[in-house]
Image 1 (cartoon, rainbow, N blue to C red):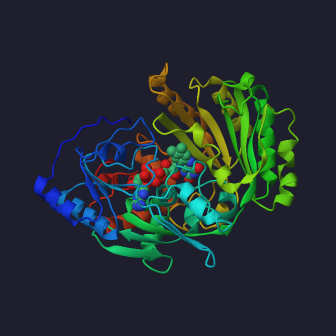
Image 2: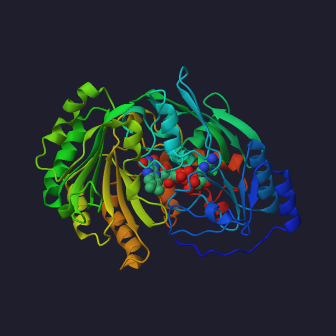
Length: 475
Ligand SMILES: Cc1cc2nc3c(=O)[nH]c(=O)nc-3n(C[C@H](O)[C@H](O)[C@H](O)COP(=O)(O)OP(=O)(O)OC[C@H]3O[C@@H](n4cnc5c(N)ncnc54)[C@H](O)[C@@H]3O)c2cc1C
């Protein structure tokens, strides 16, 4: 889990200086003023210290960095948004390619595509695509990186309509372990593209992503609504019913949690357990009333913030709940349905949870993603209809913090029996074993491993949820 910061230099100074001279961008070492910022992650629980950080100005810089790492035996990681909970953006003692300065987005409204640089956060892409009334499915927190999210799958409010984010990936430019720059799509380097769609972090450094766009917004209907936890059984059952018939334009994230001390929460409910829904209806606004009727039919909410609002606002609505630097620890699984036993387990876990800011989340996914074949990209999990997540969030100084990860692990054990057997690579913590990586890829794993070994025989890209740990560790 938390990795002590230590630095054992392995590369001689002259070689490092020579690399610096080759770059158009920046080379950072622990002595550089920017190093601290480049190596601070969203999850404050993880500290890792790469030997070198390259901030590339262009693809040639990425090639130079990969070639250097290969020559000197350093693992390579890529920092997109730096949000991965397992801290995989950083390579301990290795070389990190920090894309944070590469945040351009070029939208082609006629072709309905966006070319996205790999340092983009979700907000960068939503902002530019919404300028044309377009969007691609991205996640719930606008500060997450597009590259990491997409290359591992990607889910959010639009997933039910348009599939995993990676189902909307049309093309990438990627620098592979041998230093080549390749274009990969369904027509070019198809096997590589297949593997990138779900396991991208394992295959190389992606230097641009082209995403398909759809007409969305600019206004959607949604927000938060919550009821007292005493009514959790009734609300959970209503959630199951409404998700059984919901149109694809409606996505609802059900969450059992303590209401935050935020201005929009009545004082009496701040810190109290509630059964909450984060709701987004992204279809024709004239039909929003009908779509939301089953939610509106649940009487006496204690928080009710459902309204028409810009899609970009909806996409950043939940940002304050998951700030950078706090400690995070999760367990998650996919489920094909919500049985009585699962809902009761969910209610019990929320009632027992000792972590004040924890969230027990159920996210309805069923829709477009279920219609593709299981081997349409390495991402798989085409039987997932819900994502289940126990999300632990705390300040390290909080009483009992040392025991919180164990509570989350045990919660995960209690809902694992309801899993499809699949798992989302982007939600896995760094202490989940190789079996969990395999679980993500399921029947696609063997083909994926064969492609990985062809393109990265030395496992240069191992500082990730690694699919080939036999050829080098998890760092
Ligand atoms: C608060 C929060 C909310 C989240 N919400 C959602 C959500 O709604 N939906 C969802 O699907 N996921 C969500 N996630 C999970 C998220 O998808 C993953 O954490 C993802 O890895 C983050 O991408 P990043 O670029 O920020 O991560 P980073 O930590 O920068 O990178 C993650 C991994 O991707 C690799 N990588 C990054 N860029 C590249 C590249 N250009 N080329 C090759 N490999 C690369 C890195 O090497 C690393 O292994 C959330 C995470 C957080 C922390």
